[in-house]
Length: 197
Image (tube, rainbow, N blue to C red):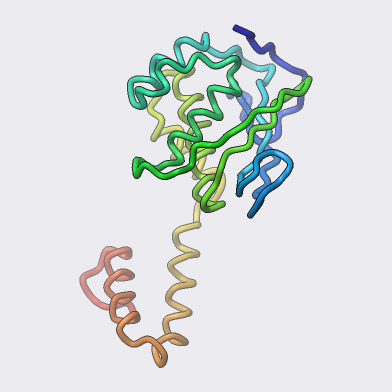
């Protein structure tokens, strides 16, 4: 089994406490250089700040949740990461998303994963990154995910909700049944029992 060594690649998205870094995301809507289907392509590297756990530790924890990955003794951390993103990307719905590839370079690995929807696959990749980091620090993956999302955007939900409310007035004349449902959704999201107008 080939083990990766830390590189001198600068951090792109990683914090100083992170072991791995994922960066340079690109989404292809059709066949591309990396896969013959729609794919999310990104780079994966080890940082110089911390050492990862042995690969078998990651495989054992991931294999508890996804048994078909328990026997997947990857060639490297990048292979395990790609397999995990591909498996979690099926969203427990047995989707057909089973293609992935890893191309190793000197300082990083380029991972391509079959994708149905760009934002969903990107969110899965970031979630797996958080999961790998949480395994190293022995913290809750959810806590790590919340910490990372707070640093990315404190007001993401508020912005989406405000955009929905602004569009509500324009859509009211065209789609009245949709707007009635939107009022209920917005009032639930705002924690109110009344309409948000």
